[in-house]
Length: 217
Image (tube, rainbow, N blue to C red; front, side, top):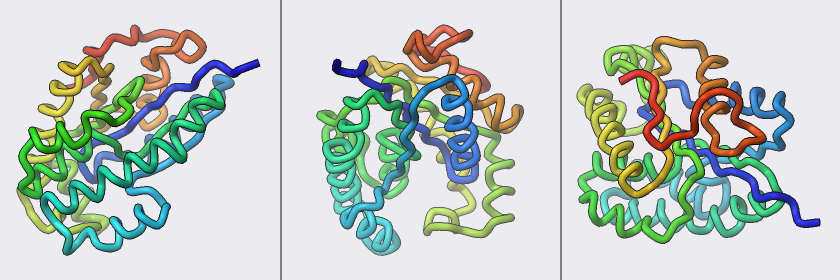
């Protein structure tokens, strides 16, 4: 018997917003609800993904955008789709939303990025985590910069604004989007909010899985 296709949940948001902590909590939450979960990340751990990660500091603009997209297409074909077809719920740390923000920060026009990613598999739920830009800046300063964007003091506020615009763009394309402010609730509460919003009756328990669902600004 062919298993019911799984759900693709993507988590994106500004650096320092708590994606890693949220993903761990979400994995626990979904598993506790009896859902088989596969956790993944972009850039991926494939040869191409490792190349993107290791060259992120000096490959920029359109070239980097194309490499990130290539890694994503390979990611979908070789990891995401097989897991979904096996009935697993896939959670990925970063996906299209991150591209639409980070590559814009790198000077790539939005239209180019939308066209480059137009054929890619869209998520069943795109989660965008947000927080006050001042809080994000404090977290980045406390842990130290992880990439070249973190050295720009204006980056947190620009990222928050671009992710807000990206949420609207994804909704306009028909993608269910959930925006959650991580600065006001615990990771466990964030995870429960996400799990409730997944558009699958076997997962959802409280929140309505509408594409305009949001929490926080």
